[in-house]
Image (cartoon, rainbow, N blue to C red):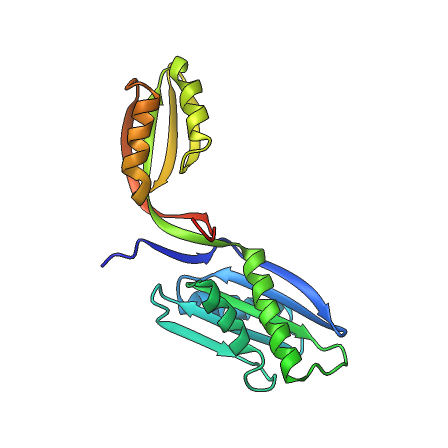
Length: 215
């Protein structure tokens, strides 16, 4: 059965913070395969080769089929596990998180480390941005100039994303809509335009939408 939606990261991102003189850097990136996740880890390790620890976790597959994590020298269970637990709680897949630590000379204890690495994972996810990848449809919508102002106003609050608009002898806009919203949106467009509109389906794919709690 086709999966209609899943969560992943929008783009590579990072954020850092200090806890008791230790510098932590949370870094996240989308990764479609385990090879891409390991390549991202290698890049972070190369960039922070002088760090004390580069602890990581990654989840590959929409069914979370591959899950790996590492404490990278920190006490067992204090780094990799809290990183991946935050990722699982957010429901993200096909991504990797690396939390780098430059030791500042003050011991944090097991509880302190667990909280610090969990925070590092959260900061990485927030910096990279969580998106809901939903099966979506692209449509070309064409109207005359007299109708465009009314349609444009409607689309500003409709459940769709405008991709580009061309102004020639008529106005043609390309938009993305979730498959689950497609039928209603097209019906609403026809209603708003009083039938003076032409729509043409132009493919479908997984498209990123904002991760909103009640979306």
